[in-house]
Image 1 (tube, rainbow, N blue to C red):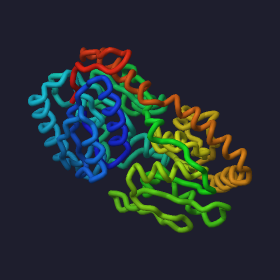
Image 2: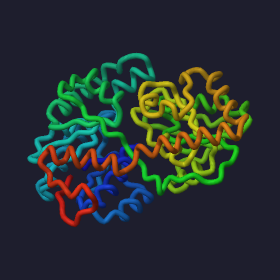
Image 3: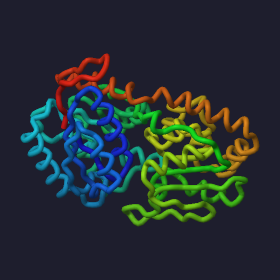
Image 4: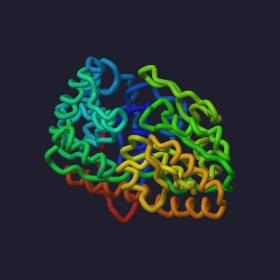
Length: 366
């Protein structure tokens, strides 16, 4: 299994590996993008079914990545020859075209073309044309393709011409880890604060006028020089998952007026922690959270201000919204996710463990 270390794909991979451990499925995890942090290493060492191979190869969406992509492809082929997995689970598009001997499952978590459409209202500049070509080729050659939402599946079909059906398997978080606590009058947000897609800057612009303090966690500087200005909010910086869980357990409201979010693990985490949700009104978040959140147009800060004030004005309404969010979030549990992936693995010829519970023997994935 491939995983990058600079975004939510790592958390997704960790959750899936943890769920696969319950069925005795071994995973060779190949990381790239940046060195693993101490917190990431700590989480991986707790998983007995994972053999980690670390690299720093640049990812396909980064600046001038193609020499690194070629080296990474060779590295992955060497890993396959050494590990001899039953299948290869890819979380980057370009490696779908790598000539592995084992069948290839490719998961599309997000992409540059759909990001530009949602955030910039246009197509990417010509410098991304090779990216489009490489993604198209990877999607075409992978034996199976999965997306975490119907909205993301539609984007893969629309922008890259994936003609065969894209299966939807929602991401998951463990409800025993992400749990509610006593709620404080706090609004919280987390993620890549520099990313225009997350649109946390809209929250910062109204923070000084809100009746409750706003706390935000995440990186403020992005790889392309973009930055987040934390005026009016309490900036926590990059903090480990257990600290994020504590913040969410205590916060009454989680706000993410996103312009683009193919799934949104942070929304799921906050919902499991019983936060009332205020989200950007975009197709993916509507698909996943309709009936369990308040939605606002991403660029309408007046609507965002009104929604947050509405919840803050009523302790009962806010608590009920948080209860609805958690009840809805329980649909996206690890067992549902792992069952979906085990089914796909079996369709590709991998050994199918006993679906009724953990198994001591099963196949391996790389």
